Length: 197
Image (cartoon, rainbow, N blue to C red; front, side):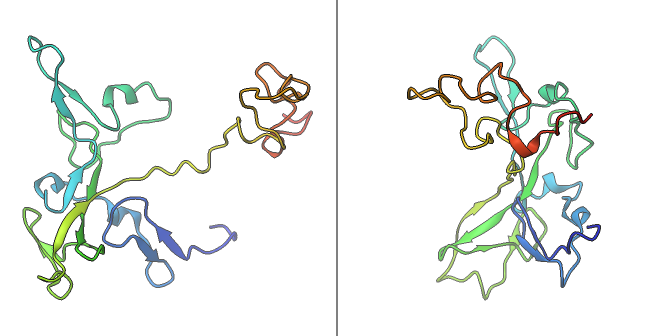
């Protein structure tokens, strides 16, 4: 962390048996979170959020894969993005997004399997009971984009929107808020000082 602070807790943005890790007690190891190579053979423990659906609009044509999150051919067009041999990659699924199932109990709590081979799983019998059985399961992966700057709302005091009134700012009287305006004005602290390179 370079003197800026100490990592106390890790909050995971994907379904995991431990959603929050106390880093003061246990050191978080992101490599330990990578699913095993045979995760596709463990459907009771893992699922692929990017599993393609084969379909076609024209019955005379062969079915084509449709990916719900990341279309692998499209990823080549994104500068700086690459898929680097993830676990479970196949010729028909070059962009898997494996995550673990969390099982929901009748009381709303979430539990993870404590054993099993992945084809079937077992649970702590003191937690999963006949009075509090499993009623569903969920798996998720969240992308956190809160660090992005939205130039439409990051202006100083007045964000740009569709003009709704007859004010100087909405007529273009304030520079830096409308397309084509001098880019040296706004959005404030995110710009370089004049004369800097």
